[in-house]
Length: 117
Ligand SMILES: [Zn+2]
Image 1 (cartoon, rainbow, N blue to C red):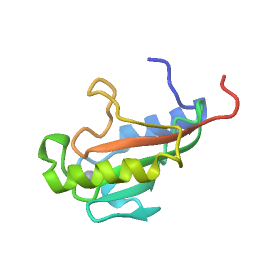
Image 2 (image 1 turned 30 degrees about the horizontal axis):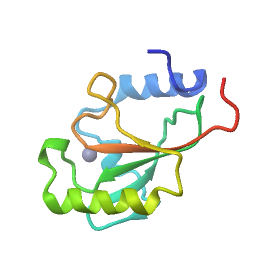
Image 3 (image 1 turned 135 degrees about the vertical axis):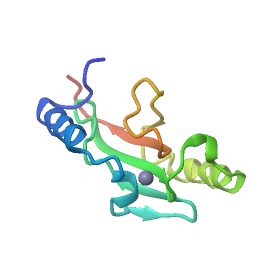
Image 4 (image 1 turned 120 degrees about the vertical axis):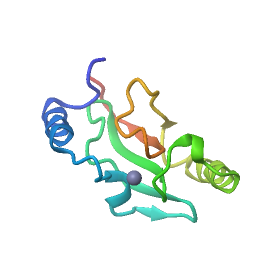
């Protein structure tokens, strides 16, 4: 897949992936933009900046994959999606094919760039 990141961001991301320690999870460590009971809103340190002007991540507060989501967590996610629908252009998740952090469930929240490449 063509990178959705600008070359400099893609290069930073590749460096991060090479150096990443298996036990260190960005989604667990990043500072929150907003906190909910079961979820947090985070900045994406390696945004899809070729196509976005804002790229945040909605992530489960605990380190768990999608299969481990509980009903209260799902229910709150539904509420969050409704609450954020006017703040972003798109909410989406990557498939396993492209997911970099498979073991910690997260959803992408983006505002599309004013000009696309
Ligand atoms: Zn994590």
